[in-house]
Length: 306
Image 1 (cartoon, one colour):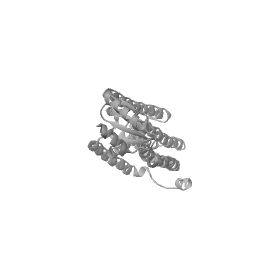
Image 2 (cartoon, one colour):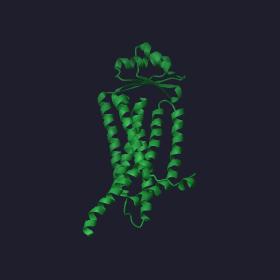
Image 3 (cartoon, rainbow, N blue to C red):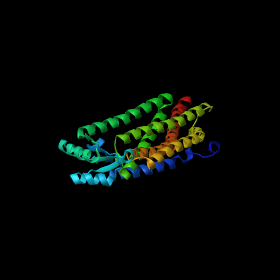
Image 4 (cartoon, helix red, strand yellow):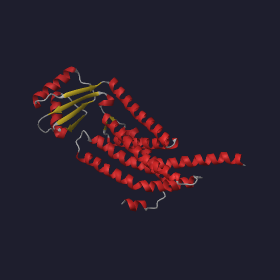
């Protein structure tokens, strides 16, 4: 497969505007989805309570819902975990001490195990959201600095544009499907950030190596030739890598428990978006910016030479 891919003759840069338009259209659609549906924030970011109910026997959502309903509680969601012997009930409101005590006594008597109850106040939720944003911002800044030092600042900016491109698609799909956004979601986004930048750096590294073999880079056509050659050389590696991880993420999505499924879905979406952006967005953006930079230098140096 690698040899066949290396022999393909496809002008990636020539079709750059098509790739940009596809991404722009999807971003606009994603923005509309976010505006209409918003995000289904979990208690980590919106405050509330979580009750972890365990049992030696298999549980069902209907059974747990019926027990909670008999006590007068209406959870926002009930998720099975741990192979079915654990149920997680999420409440949008903070449970009072008396309510927590009532729930613990009821389920301890029913299943022989005391449930674990955790609550997140509005202040804590705000802090968690702020810290999550800071974590993503620091990761992005670190990536810009690293890529700028190892390669050049234009490639660093192009890599960050691709990262935000990937993260936005994950957010838009979670909004469309109304999957709960919690700390696990942030972990998935940071995982994709690491994977995507690794794929982008491999492509940029090959571009840098191929640039060394060029006698002189004069204009955009020279840059386009180098980018196309580099993308063909890294295409097989990118496809093979993403397919391997996608199969694992798909298996987790289909066969994994409810607790891990949001992470697996985010991973699956991010892997596909990350590979697409590293091949068709980051390198194309850099090519356009680099071409403009060369054109500007040529324009400013020509009068002096005359």
